[in-house]
Image (cartoon, rainbow, N blue to C red; front, side):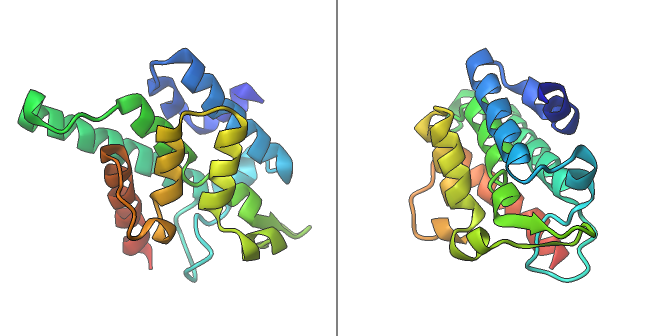
Length: 178
């Protein structure tokens, strides 16, 4: 299943720290196994259930947001160099790739492939289940922070530089869809 995760999310290979990379893969493997999500399903389910007729798919959204976050960090590096607020790129990438992993628990599917919010998801949104998965796989608190505060649940919280970048790229993608 590691190969499937890497096929879905090649951006994982941008993480330089081998241990962190392995932990990100482990989270994805567990989340995929929880409801037996297939590679095909993850490529074809909507990235959100909060809007109708969504034409952006889950894996597309995860990858696009991760790539946008990396691009933002690179632009800031090029523009400001050492004067820029330091960003841990590995934390940024790991947090970006894991921010929505909890949706694989929040969502469920009918036998016909229709995706809906699970009973679990009606009580706990994906930032909570994502942090739970990350904690279980011993990811650093800096990565869990990105997951925890990336959506509306993080409103009012002080965000790290990595969380600020990811929060904004995530909402660029979301707001353009709804």
